[in-house]
Length: 260
Ligand SMILES: [Zn+2]
Image (cartoon, rainbow, N blue to C red; front, top):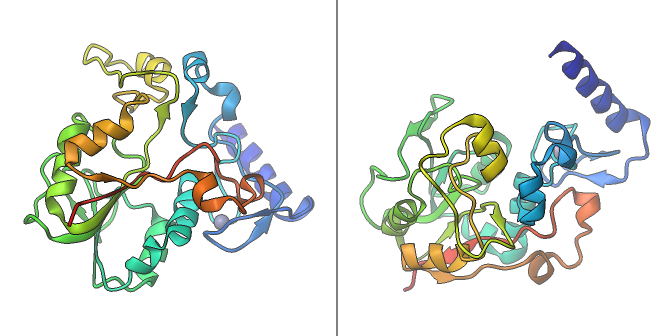
């Protein structure tokens, strides 16, 4: 473990001060020479995930060496700003599941009317204990619900989407970034796959409980009776150099609206 930490520290120093500063983190606004990989990077990705063309985090360009923001935070922030949803955050009531510390700080800076951070296992006093399967708030309480890379962890994603839809006001939006396979036709899950190694090989990570397939969009829309407003990187961020910004251009913006 110490060797790993020393290697990471070396890479942080290398990227921050010793190489050309050709990367930019939109979360902290700092430049660096590269982003740190997640674990061993894409080389450590299970073969099945590669064969199934799984779209998710960029494992090679994952963590900002300056602020620690992950690629999923950087991409979501770019998507929010480019789509105009970021401006909706002002004066909105926002529910943010599994809030990422750095992204949450920026969301708060938009001065929403109400900003509730929630997690099944809260990591701080300002985070409410809530279960996405049974959100303990009244119907139509929020304008925005954010669950960034959460649906692949919950026992019942369709129930979670129904709950998200229930607590949204008409016209409100659900932002639910989630990894999925571009090859698998149907979302796959089996309760018999309980063990860490099996989950990692079959779902891509030891704490994932399903691998979404190409049906993910219709599945989430149907579960929540929501409108599909999903956009691609090309749709919203065509002028953003994904390499420089350290984001995965294959990852879409999972945006759904509750009908008026
Ligand atoms: Zn950063």
